[in-house]
Image (cartoon, rainbow, N blue to C red; front, side, top):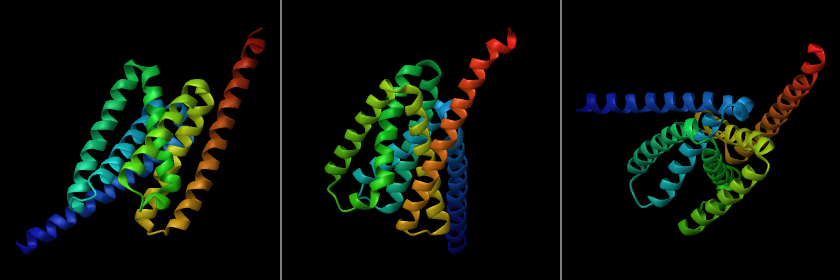
Length: 205
């Protein structure tokens, strides 16, 4: 029994590390190229939003139950987001704006919400999500750049915090730095692509 216990603990730890590495890779791609990969940043936002919301709702349950349920629900939400993005691009932008808005709020102000009532946390996440939807519909191109970069920055910062045991102040500093780099890089790529498209007609002439 002791061997089985140790083996289970080893497999669990290995699985968590592998999951963290997958999240890290996805976060890096979303950080720098998310605006061109809507399905990716929306799926990441769906996973994080749903898993974090369930951890708040299930705060009275044992830690293992909270982690397991939030993980499964997060994966299902991410899968649904990917499927929807292939057929309903406008709808997925609305969903992505909502999920990203709520997730970004948690990533940025998580420590301030730690001791707040669960109904207040969920209400604030919903309000931030609604703001994300309005921005996504009104300023689609720029909003996708900002939301995807912030989602990627949040995931990378959170994953590095878990793997390297960075404190909360360090996590927030990493988050802000990565967000600025990601937004700047994606805006530069967008403007460069637009400039190239404007030059092509003249070159062809």
